[in-house]
Image 1 (cartoon, rainbow, N blue to C red):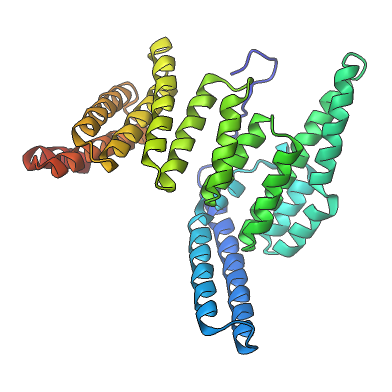
Image 2: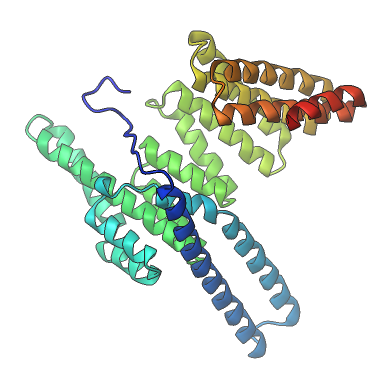
Length: 352
């Protein structure tokens, strides 16, 4: 909740089963579009091979890269379908709604054309320029600023939707360019920064992801939990690029943030959950570095917090998953240490 008149987050309810049905529908549409884009690119490669624009070795290399890219996009479809299914049409602009309805009807090209026709990047740039003028005469232009903020939110939402649709059409380069534009327009907005960081991480643009995480950490408006999350994401990116020392340093900083927050509010489930995740990240990294005894200590702390969460919220499925994962990490670590009886005990608890 917020101290402002309006809460920071709306909670939207839907009839049971509606979200699952929408997810399946969006998934089928996205899967079909992605496959069509993949087949189109494969055909273009074959044509180049036949016209001797590529030799066999070049063709095989590009084909393998294309297949890898398709597989990665395929893995993201479930998350994308869930994202589209959760859109509440009462909260979006008419253009956004029309584009998403076209998408839902399988007319993805028309949906993209609709978003491109309004040029959300250009309009967002115009809005941000006007915002600077508003600061100079804030009292007189307060009503205008409120209107522009709402329109900017809608235009940024349009731009994000355009990026998502480019991804579905198997055009990650254009999708990436939308987030690049967003950051070039405003690299101080924490919502833009977080969405861009998530996109770069999910699409393996590690250098860009690291840069955005560091911008979030340095942002004076970032709350402490946002800084902790950014350090955690930075650790993930370091691990993905094989830099375990960098991952360990980032995870340690994330851990320090959530340890402070948990100590200040020991009963807050979010801080306790994120602190448990920090222990897990540190344990996994120490395992990868071969520091099994140290890893064991962190996994034991994760288990302690997971037990507390499950005791306080016995019906929460996510906390049960956290508890199961904690037992599994301990079982795996004891296996690596040769403590097979102890490992068996923990893995049985995972199964339970």
